[in-house]
Length: 327
Length: 259
Image (cartoon, rainbow over all chains, first blue to last red; front, top):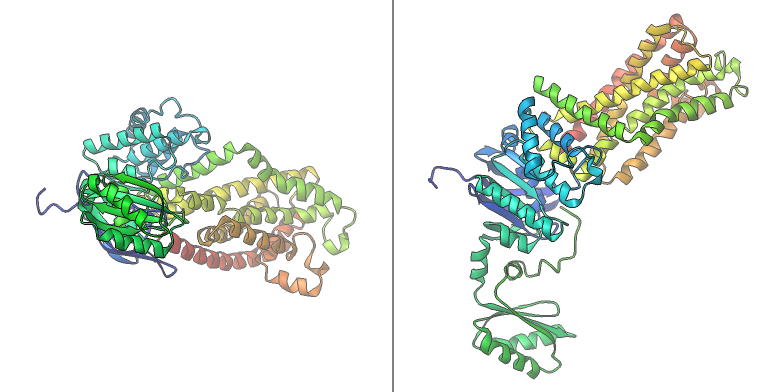
């Protein structure tokens, strides 16, 4: 890419404060043309707030964001003509049919009538909703609503598509279909930004991700690089009746082993990075047995996963995060 | 401008579609004021009411103006509910991410609520006619009633939308709504003339814009132009002030919520 070409999305020092709560803090990132970029984090991490600022429906308190060089506050109307937004599935009018949703948005995007009808027909076909287009959305399944969402987002032929939790609550087959759609759009040259709290979605779908927690970006990079940067394989120990004292003793003991690279303490065990499993596994078990009161509940070995990246940068596991009110 | 008309019409069309698909709810919305207030209440008090005090031929003709304005009140105060749900489920976000004028959503709501209110006023007057109440000021009087009703409705709808944009949960919205609507009715001349109220209630009713609106609509129905005109003039003054205040507050709440 040429140096003078601006990135598709450029965000610098973005901040949003609601009632003195910092939903987003000092956030900077850039999204390149044609990539699938993921904002990954638990509920309340600030992903949705960031997304809403980018789609111009929320004003930032501090900082700036530009979409294809246009400021999301000062040139909001221009930005709105360049983007498509795929909302979460509950943002569907259950009393309207699928086709009526698209007709409504065609009017709001000021599409010429004949072009609108042609686009709507081809979009309904693209997402496979042509047989249900004239039923009210009340009777749609989660997957069908999602398809309708995507059709609505694609209607204005956007340069950049934003998807808010595109596969939240969907079954496996529907998720794979949605991913397939998103990849096809990328092949057509579209830049795509998604928010997700699914690790596998970020891992398999996104070219690059930003891990968010408590309103801040902890780390940005491709899933592959992020995993590689952890260095070493992971071993998870889970203990029965783990007390902080026991965990501390065990950590001290394990740190003496030559192939242990790093140890992170979890509530009921340890997350250990090692150079190779062959020697490490037996030695770790031996050490564990040698510490008084230390009873092993489980041991798990794995190659670096995105979950480990998440733990390494936020100090906790995404999957163990209890749901908080949405941001 | 042309684009904005398209936006407002498309959004209004959505409200119409929604209502037409909720047939049950539509029927009750439309029929409730007629059945409950006009037919039951009107006939219930037909004999009990003091004609002398009412200064009307009968209670039904007295009550007709009250029911018309109560309908405006209920429609207006409920006017923001659909936006509240749109805000809560994210549909509003979706609308606002499109290149529409920010005001189009609000305008579509006003247009829709006013159209429904106007139709209901006509239906109420038609039902009253079946019970022998025919407006003394004729067709022109009915047109004036519609204008006054809509002017009142605009302010009320603005209050309702301001609340929809401000409240944290829809529970709050309905609590405030319930708290507002009945006192507005009882502390007005909807059901009894001010002269029949205890002094403290009279004093409160005096500051209720609804009283002024009813006192303009009532002579249009039961008296005639000579008595109605000064009242209509007063009501217009009150309504312009009321609407200005409500629209200002509504615009502020909207700006704060959608930017």
